[in-house]
Length: 237
Image 1 (spheres, one colour):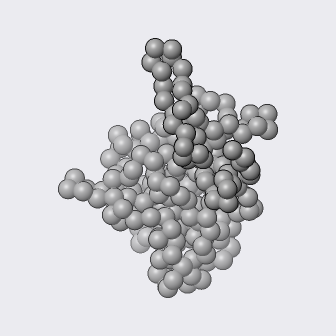
Image 2 (image 1 turned 90 degrees about the vertical axis):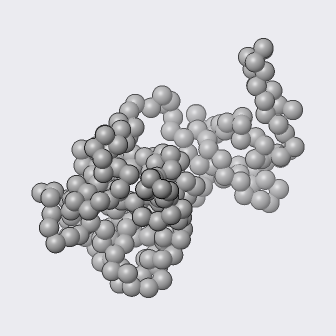
């Protein structure tokens, strides 16, 4: 099988080594430019039930909502709605409980949610993807983990609801700051397979991209990846 590999094209506004889709919010939903330097990352949840990052981006692109966020994250995708050099309206309020964090000096990140009888939840895949995005933004803007905050920390709004409980928030921060077990970060790689684009996770070592064996069937459905418990090795059939 001949496979043509290519890295996802990365526009200047997109986070390094991550595929970020872009759909501009309606001009009435944000303010061009910033009055202050970016110093904080503010986490939110969409308060939706199995909504998607793309649908949220479309919502803020089509009509005056009087609010916005820079990024929307779900289990599979990230969509950017407002450019980082512009001011999204995501954590404003009549009263503030944080002495410094405001719309003018922060980036707003919305995590898509789902709901059941026990309330709202954020899927693990969504949380993991958000953490990757946050880490890259921390590096890009020289932001410490201390300056990664919740909407709740700024205005006491119950947002993101699944992380308002302090124990849940501290666990999220632990995951955010824990040392990586691998020296190379995972990124998304788009591969052209017989004219169809397939996206898989990969790592780059010495300019060579490596993908997981378990993702081979995505590229060649006729292949089956198994594990031989006796020989302690993977099998490709």
